[in-house]
Length: 522
Image (tube, one colour):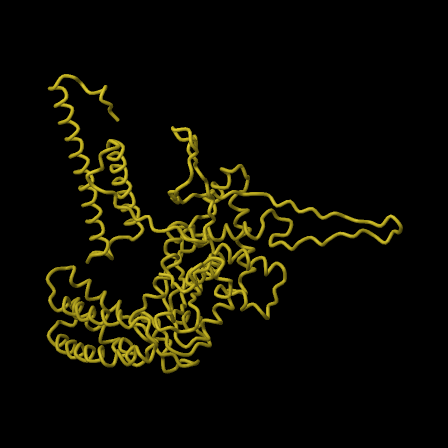
C-alpha cells in the first residue's frame, strides 16, 4: 500500500502513476472475465449436448484449476485495493454454513486495555462473532494396553490376569479403526495402498504396501458375512435395479489384464416413500453373460429395472427355471440413442423424439416423492396420453426411415423395448430410468481409474464386497469410517452370526454421523 509520502510531487509523474494503476485494474478485470468465460464454456461443454464426450473427472480437474486461477486474480485485486476503497467487483463466494455438530473451540480476543482515555473502566456492550473452519490433520497414535498380573501371597493358586482384548489382526499392529481407515481410503477415497503407504511414511511410520494389503484382505474376509446378508436383504425386495461395469483384472502369467465385470444390484425406494432402506451390492463375475445376472438373482422375484443390454433377456426366457421376473427398461438409454443422432447434424425427427422424452421427465419430476398410488394415478392421467401419442409417432416415422440408418436403429431400439419402457405406467414404484443404480457404479469406475486393475479375481471379489458396504453407507448418510470401525470391532468381539443383519449399514446409529437424518442424500 502507498502512503502520501510515497507519492511523487511532480504532477506529470503522478498522472503517469495513476494511468498505470488504472491500466492494471482494467487488465485484472479482463483476466477475470476471460477466465470466467472459460469456466462458462467448460460448463456448457460438460452439461450441454456434448456432455457424454467429456470425462467427468477430467472436467472437474480442469474446472477447479480455472476457478483457482480466478481466485488468485481476485486475491491480487484485493491486495492492491486500499483500505478505504472497495473492489469494483464483489467476491462471489459460496461459504455455506458450518454444521452445528462440529466441535467449537472458542477464543476471546480482548482489547489491549480496558481503561478509557478519560480514566474510567470500559464495559462490554456487545460483541462480533465469526466462525472459521479449522482442521486437525489425521494423526496416528499408539494404544498401549497393559494387563497387570496378580498373585496371592498366602497361597500358590496361580496368577490372575485379564484376558487380552480380541484383535482383527492377531499379534498385529493396527486397531480396528486403523484398518477401517485403510479400507475407506482405498474404496471410498480411491487411494491405492502404495499411495497410502507413502502418506503414512511421511509420519515416520514404516509400513509397506504388502502389510496394508494383508490388513485389507483379513478385513474383507471378516466382512464377507455382512456382505452376504446385504445381498440377501436386497433380494427379499420386489423392486430392484441392476447394471454392470468393467473390472479389469490382472491375468497371471500373461502379464496382461482380462476384463471382468462388477454387477450392481441396487434398491432405492425413496422416490416413492418406500420403507426399505436404500442399498447396493456389487458382485464380481469373470464375464458379462446373462447367466451371471441369473446366478446373482437366484431367489429374487419381482420387477428388475435395467438398461437394454441383451444379456438380461435370459432372465425372462421361456425355458428359464426360477421365480418370475419382470424387466422394466430405461428411458434415459432410449433418449441417449436419439441424442447421438442429433450430434451428427440436422436431425428433426431425432430432435422431436428427444423433446417428447423430455416432456415425460418434466412430469416425472413433479411426481417424485408421492406415494405409489398417487404416482400411478397421475401417470395414467398425464403420461399415458403422451406415451400413446409417441407410439403412433414411432410407427409413422419407422415406416419412412431406412431401417439400417442410425435413426432407424435408434427407433428400432425404442420399439424393441417398448413394453418394458411403458411398465412404469402400471406400477407407481417403478422409475422412469435406471439412473439410481448408475450413480452407485460411478465410484467403482473412479477407483478403477486410480487402481488401473485388480490384481486377481479374489482381489476383485474383496473390492466388490467392501465397496458394497461403503456405498450403502453413503446411501444411508452413514459415515463409512465410523461404521466399519464399529462393525469390525463387533465381529472381532464375537457378534453372533444369527444376528448378522444387525450389522448392516442402515442399522448403524445414523445420528452419530448424520445430524439431519430426515435429509436424503443426493
